[in-house]
Structures are given as structure tokens and as C-alpha cells.
Length: 59
Image (cartoon, rainbow, N blue to C red; front, side, top):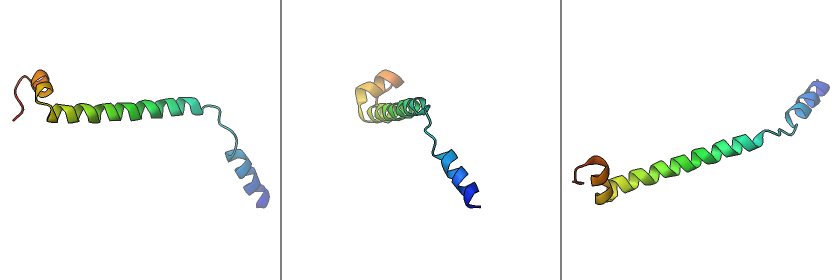
């Protein structure tokens, strides 16, 4: 039992060299999320931008 547990622990603690794409994808998702939040905020609070995109003035 102890040997099986030790084998599982050694197997799960191996260094995974493919962490770079994970960080890259995570960073891209965070950037995209912040971009969308800023875009929506400016769309609803800036009358000029709202009129430029929708074609009608902000109420």
C-alpha cells in the first residue's frame, strides 16, 4: 500500500514542461476579458462611442 502511494506521488510530482502554452492561453483569456469589460463600459457610458457604434444617441 505504501509503495503504491509513493509511486502515485512520484508520478504526479513530475515537472511538466508544457506550462508555457497554459500561461499563454490564460494570459490571452484574461486580456480578452478585460478588453470586453472596457469595451462594454465605454459603450454604455460614453455617448459619442455609443452613437458611433449603434447609430443612435445614448438615452
